[in-house]
Image 1 (cartoon, helix red, strand yellow):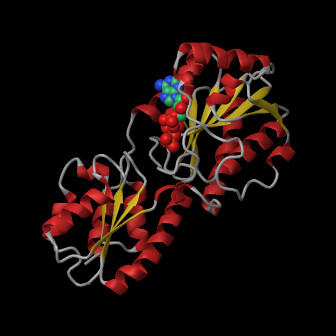
Image 2: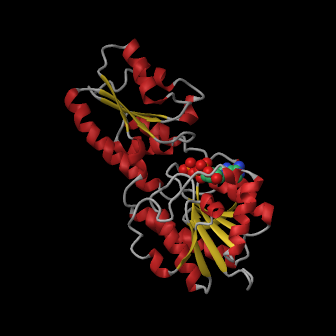
Image 3: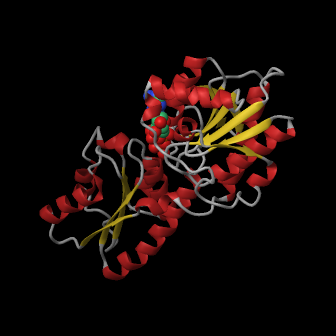
Length: 327
Ligand code: ATP
């Protein structure tokens, strides 16, 4: 990064994810360590438009690594999707002397970053922060591991009652377009199956399960369902089973927003710390408009165009693992 670019703005946007605070801390401290000044931008792109921007020192990020959510708050901002909104955002950014931005968020956040950086020709570095793990070009996104562990703990608890009452449980987890949480959550918690958007569009997964008599050797069953229009969601699937197979004692549990909360796991804290540091290294390397990713445990730069454009595939071998282990 050339000499004149010395002030870095940092924001979190879209859905919050555990570990975002660890990333904010890492970006802030690495920037200050390298002689830059830092501005915290509140509520994502909304804060840029509303001029909700403050100086960030190392103390602003003390004692936050263990906290879920984001101290910078987050918001979804419609105005930023318009050229007029982005012009106001850029003017405010300039008023504060910000010459580069680190944006932490999901697909939408990176899409906004790409448009903004191209329009006004300045560097933005993205950090993937979303529990869904659905960004192409990185093996992991910040928040995914914590959410996965939360799901596993919840399913473990539900299993106690499912077993005692000999019930069939459909447990709905997040993952509108991606089945990472449902599939890996199912494996981690020893569930019978995962109904995920990637497969639901190809075959009727519920029909397959019904044809197999759910878990033949057990009286209780747990099926994880990704909340998605493609799967129909847990309530819809349970209704189908109740109507067609009254012998099953079916229950639904929707985990909802508790999946987003909680103190980040060590894995998410370390990932966020590495990615935050890497975002500043990227700026020092004169990189622009790239997302920081981790592939095979190495930091990589993924152009926004790729991270946004491509879908990240699930590992289909894991479906077989789940099937084999659920006999
Ligand atoms: P999550 O994956 O948790 O939903 P996200 O980053 O995908 O997170 P979005 O609400 O989709 O969350 O996007 C965050 C914000 O990014 C939007 O509120 C909007 O301000 C901005 N944004 C999204 N798409 C665009 C776009 N095409 N142009 C400009 N800004 C955009």
